[in-house]
Image: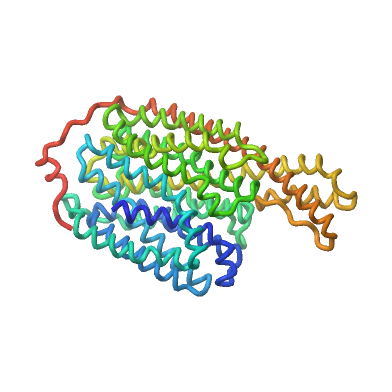
Length: 520
């Protein structure tokens, strides 16, 4: 089950590295390629609540296998696509497959493992959460260098087929012992509401937080989404039999606290790699593959740390491990702020990345374990879908907010730096240089020299713009990473709201079997 989970997370980041290749290979515009990336994230994010509940109704293994088959078929269609529209449709289908399989992994952990062993299981889960998004650009860069962009998708096909066979052979059939009914009105309201919010947050910067078309704007899309979600919550309270999101879930203290912490945590966590990748590629000139290799030790430490954090959570309590992990993350960010400079190499970032890697490993698994502590196994699918959705929205919001903060700060620092360096250029180029440098904040890359310059002047212009951009970006990055550290410290303090830790006892086998029927 973790193999399919790994593939779905990997494909969320692996396509980023192929943007220039896709633009030329299938004659796509930059906006079309961005939609290929965002379309997957949008479909994946808005369906998690519904697909989590579907697992409760139809069985976790069944939904997982359907998700794997859908994801594998979509991957083949992505590889065969010869137009931007065809690739976008296939990516949306991939997002559907990922949303179908993702919640079933968490639900299965709650169903199969007794409380005393869940920390270890969530440790493996957390290792994948931390490892897959970082290793994606490395795998993508290798495939692009050796084969073609199509193999970024084709590689999923044999893995998906093998995973489906293994799931049918080894995963026990799992479904709550009582019959369920799907709340179709809840599905419609949740999907429409989340679509409006997620679309607005994902596409806001592209439309400059203004008009999309006619009377429709980013603001109206978000407001409409929030309104529909409010109606959804009211509807869930009126549903007495089978609500899509049982309100009683939030009556469990740890579930409510854990979801709030997960939302805040994603706000701060999502900005770390987002900013660091831009720094290495745009300010320091690393290729996508070199960037992936530079942060790979961080991913390895996250995976290793997550496995051990799960065991520590079983022994000492998830909330204490989680709190320590988030505080250590903040420390790692401050170390990065101190070590990163306009001319720093990747090796100088290793101390901060090592701390962040170990700390990340001590957050993913304990957070999931603490949040799910005390959740009724009958609602495992609904709980996993809700918690996954809340974190996804937190991550999307974090990307939007931190992207806006970085861009605003970068615009200010670049103009300041350009005014200081303008005297090194001929007087006729100074005003153009200052304006182009400030505008570079929108694209996170230094501006190109004007056409018609002689080679010596063009070379001088390139060198000065590169130095200006690197210095300005470091200043903006430091502000952004400090903001992330503050958010993570706040999230750590919320851990005091969790219930006191009780060492879990082994559940009798008869009770676990009664909770879950062996049918699918």
